Image 1 (tube, rainbow, N blue to C red):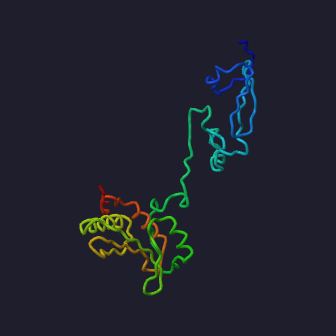
Image 2: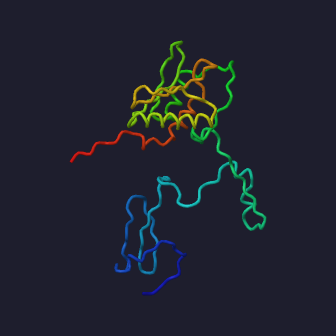
Image 3: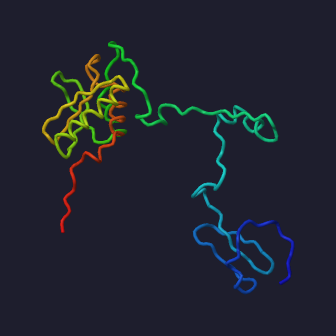
Length: 214
């Protein structure tokens, strides 16, 4: 087959070698463009309307452009990278640290608490005797020893964070934890951070064993 000069093409067409010349090969799903490779016309698809976005490199962030990172890494022996530290909205709650709460600080509103509740698993908002809000989580464990072990694991995490939940072994197989910030009479961000850290505790080995039927 005669060859003609054409721009380099990085699309593998080895699977088309059995096709007769001048065959149009469609790639379904997007708007096609055509390119002739020798006597073979290959129909290729563009990603119309950025349906999947560009493959490979991403667009730089505004902070990266401002730091002129491209001038520092292309063709220079002295390479400097600017590392962007993710802010609190990007990090999960379990990666944050509890901070001191001033007694003059207002507790979280019910709407704020409901929004943060989506970031933790298995917790619910309840009212205490004084009308303030707190969050509660319940666990079903295999036996009394597993209940004590779960409380010990929660205590270890709380000790490292300096924010302590109220823990109750309600029955030999049920543990209850409640979180609130007593100094402000309601919920603070610390309560949800602590709840997220408790969510990360391994509990699968303490759960009741599933009964296997023959």
